[in-house]
Length: 302
Ligand code: HMG
Ligand code: MG
Image (cartoon, rainbow, N blue to C red; front, side):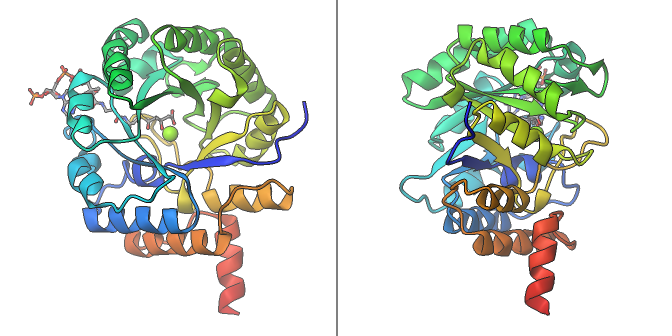
């Protein structure tokens, strides 16, 4: 398998990145972040989620954010919908794609969405059906595909099992997520291969949190298998509220720098992406959690 010559990134910063922030981030700031990401050349942006505001207060402004963004032609705006209630709420805002989110680990499924893996699939099935009937694309996030904060190591068979269930209910493409960033390259490859038994390469993406600093290596490992869709967060924002200690996704800036350095096209303007990361980091009162952003901002300052 030769390494892909182009990669498509989904920036999940507005959703995965911000969902764990304790202080409310105003909708206007989220809207401006989305604007800056699309201006930087992102063609897929995960904007928000329609989940219980008691569980994830930061995403309670989903309608306001979706109504406030100025959509650009050719950009796909996705949102998370865990059940029909969430889907019906999202429908009014016309997302291009909805994301159902399950886990390869039973314990994480319970903690994150309050049901078993089997029950989650029962809940997702009518959501997937309704979305496809409405002409909305459907993605499935698969959490804890290498490790779980409650169960430890996750066997690739569990990933394959979940991918098969997702496929069975009509989910069009899936994310292999390392929720807590414990994956290392070979383990990640096993999880991707288990998924590839059910999904075409074009329909599998990598979603690697960088908690243990492995996300770029894991991305390279997935690239070696031909995967060319990846999720990342501008400024390395993020963490899952139900995965204690888990930090952000791999920083989009770091990923873009690596890919461009390898001659892989992304369509993203790194300088404008760094500006977007600086914008949100300034709002949050900290520095971007990206080595590349830090290096380039230092260079600019010098
Ligand atoms: P539940 O309590 O089992 O749901 O929660 P329920 O159906 O029994 O309803 C309980 C209450 O929630 C009711 O309200 C419902 O109306 C309300 P009450 O009568 O008590 O006032 N409710 C909702 N409200 C708004 N939107 C909805 C909704 N559904 C029910 N869609 C539920 C089940 C899934 C809703 C809950 O567990 C939840 O919201 N969980 C949040 C999970 C979440 O957002 N996690 C973070 C995103 S996943 C992630 O980050 C991982 C990912 O990045 C990949 C990776 O890295 O692994 C994707
Ligand atoms: Mg995540």
